[in-house]
Image (cartoon, rainbow, N blue to C red; front, side):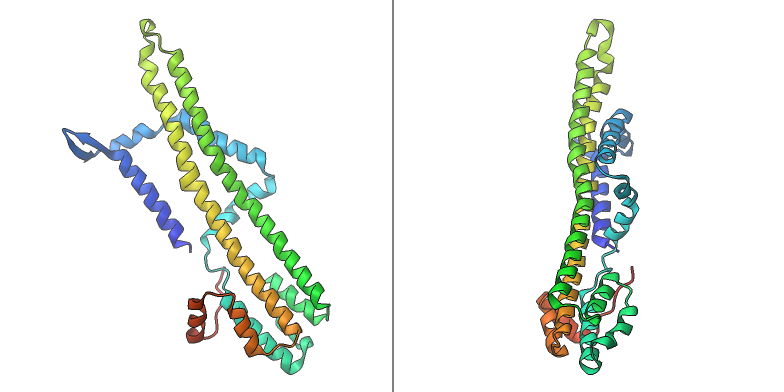
Length: 277
């Protein structure tokens, strides 16, 4: 579970609600919960939230939009990709290959739940050219990363659109206020409402951009970097096994993908375990 995202989101929501409640009464700061209602404005919601969602829907294919629940699941799961698991598995595969040959890895491949890992093993079991194996696997990584970039880009698009519609709402509120500034006809009664809409839409735009969409995009890019790292380890490990490298040397080489602290931890904790989705 992505604890930092949840903690940050809750803290940001809490702080902004407290800020809305604080007011000065007789020179003393007081919390007035009822003031939160001042920041609810249907017109602002329709302009900022509604238009932002509409532009995102218009800008991206239905297939990507339907996958939004999946995006949240990926974003919240920080333990899906465990590099140490793959390093240990590749070291074990190298040991089996040196003892029994590459054909003995076919059984190990069928036990893998990761499709990419299984494909990589089968490519060397089928005695493909090493350069072709590396090329196929690297192309898979590049295409995957492009797809992930498109997904993160969708939330970044929403992050850039929300403040823009916040400004649109501000203009709408100001226009209505100026149109209704006929004091003789009693138009001054709507000035407060129109000005409130003008300001609240900007607030909604900032909240959507910086408290909702930006954190989602950042977390999705982090998950992509973690997955790419694991797949790079697989590519390097598989090609090294095909070249017949020593298992101990292979492990040392793959550990160079990790930070020094993680390398030291691997020496004391033993075999890594793959986290469940």
